[in-house]
Length: 561
Image 1 (tube, one colour):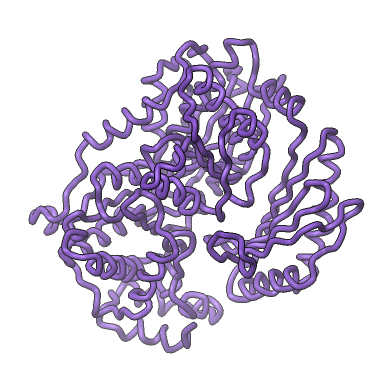
Image 2 (cartoon, one colour):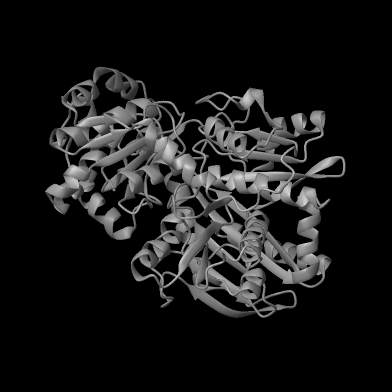
């Protein structure tokens, strides 16, 4: 932490800070606002920076992006001359300042003698992951704040496998980041980098190769391709890529939500552009009812996450991330098995806060299910290892927060291939006279009822951060011994216990009936999250268990001031 007043004055007097930024700072008359902007550096979260756009060390701006990029450049230089030649690929989303941040990052890398490849326009995050693998760069950057509200932007860093950086690389970057001053940053104008050839626009052939790889993941073609689909990219990057692959697959009845078709950095129609939130489907549902659509699909602004709703009588049923993941796994594994394409040593990876709904079908078909810490940087770390050891064939990775990846073309969540497989799955079952809701109900009847709930408690600012810390410590030290008839059987503390996974501030409480709940602070947002999972052969009992756990645990959390 800094002396925030000292840092504030430092920016006001710095020869490196432009006059417009200084004027913004001078107009601040709220001491708490100044404190929040300058009490620390913007931290690396899941795999990079994410924060509110504005002036200050704890904000997303041209200076924090420059500092982070210089730190990344120093890390790449440490790897040797070949790493500089291999270079960095950069993609961006639709947000305010994404283009500026992209050009600044490219210029800093170029000034450090690092070859840089930049997409000519907005692209989904998974296309950056693919580009890193395809171009064999040492690293990659996506300028995005994913599904955060419009005042945010972010900076995600990737390493040579095409997955987000892990702790060891993040620590190296951070060690440079914390030591750098404004005067240490090397700069080159974007236009100069292009002229010199050290910055290069990524050719269309990379897009073509990505689409070829995605389309190659299809399993069945004997499906109902006239199924009525409503698609919303929520004013993000998914519009052209998702529609392109659905068109190439022959889906002839894809209807776009016009109000959410074009890029909009303010997300005017939705506010919080997160398809995990059913409110984001308001426009899609309206159009769906008008045309009697079978399926509604929405992707988040950087198109790495996707949610779906299926026709259910006169309305639409919102599938949560666990349900969608389980249905996709059920469809993909059985489809590959039917075509004798299921690998003998096939593996699926999920996060520790993702439910067990897909486990029965994996066990039935002899596919190994692995668990990792939250985040696709951890989920994709395993297939990165298996690429070398050949111990397992990676099939699918997922987490409950509507992130899925299928195949090896990208090493991050991919809503393009996931949207294609959702449409294929819906078309396959429709040809059999089944809706996705029917398929879900059949799954529950066969394997039992898996119920879940995610609760996010938001605590903004410094005080909020401190309260979240107090909550975690209190829950860690005084766990609930019982909730109604359910008794605490085991506590897993991922920060202190030997779990075989990297250390992380996550607590998991396993109850004696097979139910469990998990508590963790968000790595990217001012939230503490409570994940609740129950199982029972009786649906009503499973639902009641969720309510009982929610009431008791949420009450415990909120009592900690």
